[in-house]
Length: 85
Figure 1: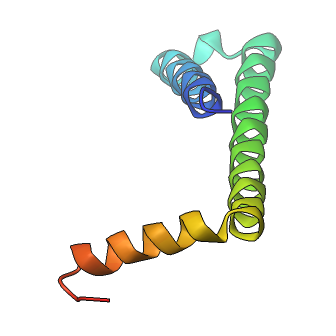
Figure 2: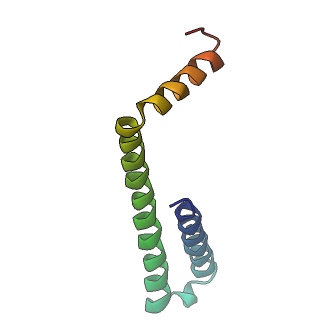
């Protein structure tokens, strides 16, 4: 789960590279190149949504199973902001 954002970033780099490659010479635009770029785009957003929903599920579960940990994090946040609990 921790490495998925890096995988999404790699697909984003590939997609952006394909855009630069295709836009620098419009004669390079082929069905396969556009399809490859589209697949990279779809994979990037699929992985990004998996990360988003996975993180939300993790933190919602953490809140219900470890309220002591959430209280410690809240105490650290309050002290860090300059207020005393």
